Image (cartoon, rainbow, N blue to C red; front, side, top):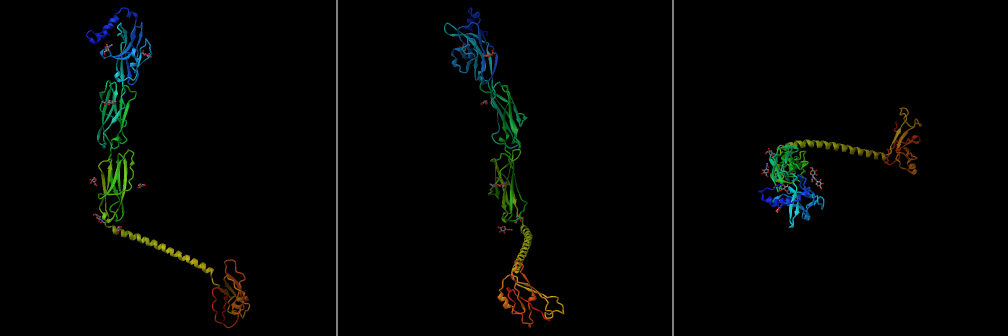
Length: 497
Ligand SMILES: *[C@@H]1O[C@H](CO)[C@@H](O)[C@H](O)[C@H]1NC(C)=O
Ligand SMILES: *[C@@H]1O[C@H](CO)[C@@H](O)[C@H](O)[C@H]1NC(C)=O
Ligand SMILES: *[C@@H]1O[C@H](CO)[C@@H](O)[C@H](O)[C@H]1NC(C)=O
Ligand SMILES: *[C@@H]1O[C@H](CO)[C@@H](O)[C@H](O)[C@H]1NC(C)=O
Ligand SMILES: *[C@@H]1O[C@H](CO)[C@@H](O)[C@H](O)[C@H]1NC(C)=O
Ligand SMILES: *[C@@H]1O[C@H](CO)[C@@H](O)[C@H](O)[C@H]1NC(C)=O
Ligand SMILES: *[C@@H]1O[C@H](CO)[C@@H](O)[C@H](O)[C@H]1NC(C)=O
């Protein structure tokens, strides 16, 4: 570079340079310095490599790297005091021909033109510029910082248009592109506002206005940033549920009115389609709070909204006729929303109820009657069965005579002594002594029959042949006293003609 005569800053260094160059023999010795790179783009944070090589006869004096030229210059690397430049390392340590350096962790402020400069030591000990490279222009590209999307401070109800802002910063170059999406559908937003922030970096902000909808709980806003330093766009997103408030609709339902007196009436409060979930319900009867033990948990709907149902039971006493039952809902710390229903008690309650009850009573009476009848019959049957069983067990002995051929001509025992008479004798199983049997045999018109052995089975009947019985013809005597039921004697009375 040729010094400009009117540039005092440049004359300061140019003079010794010219003097040196003018020294005879110096250039003839063929010293050359190569700085091959014209422009080097580097991304912030990365390491920059600046190439510089020399050739020809070496001369006493060091090589330095300067950033900028003239009064604005800054020494980046000096061969004589390497420890002063912690970010800089040599590509080939201690080389006298390769002065390539690495500068790590490049920042936007490192942007500028870098010169590789050969100094020459003068007799005084001072070093003067001997030769410099053509300069390497270093541009530092900076990636935008993560994209942030911000929304309103407080929740908003559907129908309101609210601004959302997308920001990113610290990027270079300045050119940047922003796109907005709502659930992957592009929406038009403001052009990015780019402002310079610190040296050689920029910040960006873009705003979009969105009208929130009731069904926006699952919706998401996305800000997409495209920049030359990015291989893929950067995205920031915002869940609309963070700022959406959908107030509930509140309805109170009850059974068809009017109701009967003393009936329990259920009031149902339907709290529908709200967001967020936090809601509290209270019940009031004529403005006075009613205790409700149990309020169900909100149930989530497919679109992210919630429903809630609460029930309260009220005893419809006469004095509560016309009472107002209110369901009060406080949603997301907002003003209460309430809905009411009235409790009406029908006047014709008594008539209706008595008619009803008489029908019911009649039914009850019929049922009770039928049941009682059945019970009585059952009891009677049981008693009868028990009785017959007892009768069978304790049946008193009985005798029945079977007279042969009660023909008119042969009716007396005299006329036909061989005439046989059969008697059915029913004896108890009880034993009788022989003695008693003999004693009783004196009474001639009584038949004494001993059953030799008690039958083993249930059959209590003993049959006897009465042809062994002698029937006395003595005049009729008064009938003997009937034996008690325990007797095994049968009284056989013969009717005479
Ligand atoms: C710069 O120097 C490095 C290290 O010596 C070398 O690998 C690279 O090829 C050089 N680049 C140019 C453009 O000369
Ligand atoms: C660098 O700047 C200093 C003062 O800031 C000046 O003395 C020196 O001559 C300059 N060197 C070059 C090569 O411009
Ligand atoms: C610019 O962006 C950076 C990185 O995102 C941030 O730290 C800084 O606060 C922003 N500056 C302004 C003025 O917005
Ligand atoms: C309703 O209940 C009250 C108190 O329990 C009672 O006095 C009244 O007779 C009842 N009325 C009817 C119609 O059942
Ligand atoms: C609340 O009521 C529901 C049904 O109505 C029942 O399943 C649940 O157990 C009750 N919870 C409590 C704590 O009483
Ligand atoms: C609803 O609640 C508010 C606040 O408590 C009250 O002022 C208003 O009268 C209530 N409305 C009905 C219909 O109960
Ligand atoms: C309840 O009130 C309504 C309206 O005032 C009235 O028509 C009805 O007869 C009342 N019922 C009773 C049981 O008093």
